[in-house]
Length: 152
Image 1 (tube, helix red, strand yellow):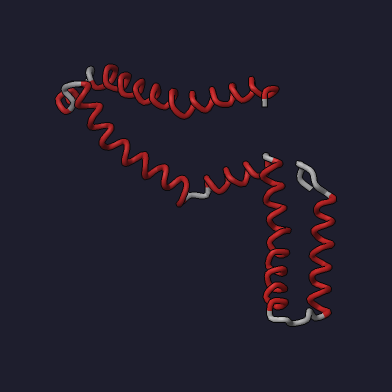
Image 2 (tube, rainbow, N blue to C red):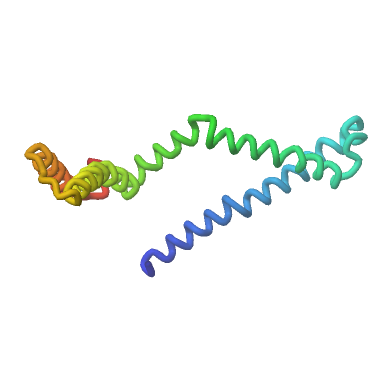
């Protein structure tokens, strides 16, 4: 971890900047610029928003629920987030490997649980069940032989 300390610090700095500081700074900047460059110079809008505080409160009361809806739509209703997740898996070898491991291990777990139930009832395994278990073992051994952090 110590050898990666500068990279970790850089990562945390970017996260703090992009997620928190830049967000607050950009929101404040947008409110100030739009009010003092647009609202103050247009008499009709100046009557609707006589002070910066009123303008800010109205924009916040409308903007926050609107942005929550946009965020919800991004994650739940549009294909955008699904695509982002796919790209993340494609470009992150440990995540990609974890997905591959899960796809290999789940059939093994299912087969083992079925065999445990059968053995707990003092039943013998059939030749097909033994062959299926051997096939799963071979797939698992082959998969383990290709262990790497690159796509196979």
